[in-house]
Length: 466
Image (cartoon, rainbow, N blue to C red):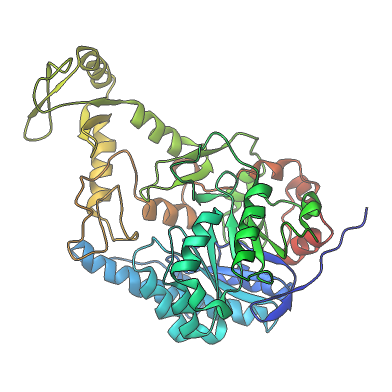
């Protein structure tokens, strides 16, 4: 059966309705984005701590010299702007005037507005649009309008877009290039599940996008496209979305399939691992220091986090109810009270080598090995403020430099692990984000015998519906 998709006006130019999903911390680069644009679609480079390159094109890793978190935060912002500008130039050179180039940022990253402004001040002539999610980016519209680039908020519900429109976006509608619906049960990376939504009970993306279109139509946005993100593998599976008045103008964004291209910067070992995934290997979890759910490949890194949280008991400062067993922990030998059953469990964990009891912000203790406890502590001390607020280190980008809560040892330093895996770190010991369809690499004929297509070959395959 023949399949056909038609070009569409996006960010001021007629291009294929295909978007490379932006993947932060050096995974969506100028090289990959430029290749997507050169193929006649939309390439997206990430400005989330993008790599700076030397004159020979080699990656220059950031070395932090600041003694305080705020000093290191300033270094991080400076590096992020320089890296973003460099990646924009690389993408622009490869695209050679074809397609469109977008920049992706996370609103909850540390210094998001400063980075966005800094990159656009130097490179807005190279960038056609900005995609932005991970939070509620109310100030995205005036910032994009200031630099005369299109903006694409990433949302996961019609309710979220309604709030953004009424509070901010209605004041700059001419620069709203599209609305990205990122399905919270299907997309890779961080997911926008609300407290009212069950992570174990996925809802139909069709119904949610149809409601988003209805909401947009109320605001006169019938000609503004929706970008479907999350769960998109081959377009033949989405034919009922095409030319459908309930959906309206629709564009498709792919984040997972672009990982397996020649221009993708991930390691050969990472690509090989993707080919081995099975359904169920990608899990939705809530360990991220952002507080968001996230989707990642289950490996030793995630296993340790699950196990760490399984070794958790509640305590009180004074005897109360069943909490009558005294328990001593920490360098100051603090005395707290736990239940008799939890005291026995703690003793067993300590005997098994998990001898360090670490307090959480929720009046609980988790138990870790001496080595892991030292690693957690050192990672917290090394914090460079990569998030606007961080559960793991208690950093916040405010005048006090803190969330006001205790650091949470049940989480992890996300900057450390994402930098490591992006730069050839050991896969099994790092967070490996992936969409929930990543298991399909194993059976897709495009990747037979480990074949890795170019971006152009992937785009051609998508245009055939495959």
